[in-house]
Length: 334
Image: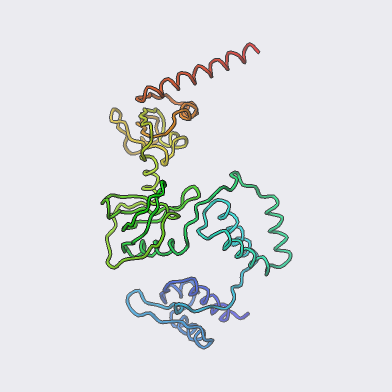
């Protein structure tokens, strides 16, 4: 294939990846001058590819919306990457497509794979194991997901019908800040108009989502993933636990992640700058329905700690320490 023809095909791939591409960007990616980019665009138009010219400061070229391109052609490695992505996404809950859609997409790609590539894939799948068996995943409706994503991108309010964990239904208007995938489930976080507070909703419990007229300005410090994890750590549970732990932030977070606990600098020993990775006292706050899982976690930390509350946790830690001591004594006499 001649070099100009290859560049025209590369230009087509860049344009069909979506969005508007500036002439400067295309020229840099193709390694040519701007006038050459315009000549290549002309060749695509001659081939009946509807390339549109977008004027303005951020103008450039794009493929006309709704245009159906010829059948997609993938290289061997590209086909393997797509199939593995579909399989891994389905197993770990990181795909928003329904099970049927994911399986039919995989089947379509496998049908056109050359035999040697299909054999490579089968060999890999036979030797591949997942550490977590697939369970029931909460897959959101694709239409709801795309509607909410559009509302996030354009900062538009979204109206939705929501069903909570107890089966109660409500009509809500949300100023959505972002979408987060966590532990096999999809969430949207934003300001709930009804309560005037920041809330997090599971996308699989949303129905009839539609964007509304108008727009809003999200907070400057918005961090959707952090908000979702903080929401888990501060949710209402039976027990409120407060600890003081002496160690590095990294070590504590390895056992008590942000989705479980809030970590604060201890006022008695402030932490600044590079001192963060030195062992100092940190105050840890978390909420839990049960406390029996905490003593083993605190033991795994292997750092000094103080249980400030509740008293029940102190008793559990003492009992756990006594059991460990009895096991150690028994091992010496065995």
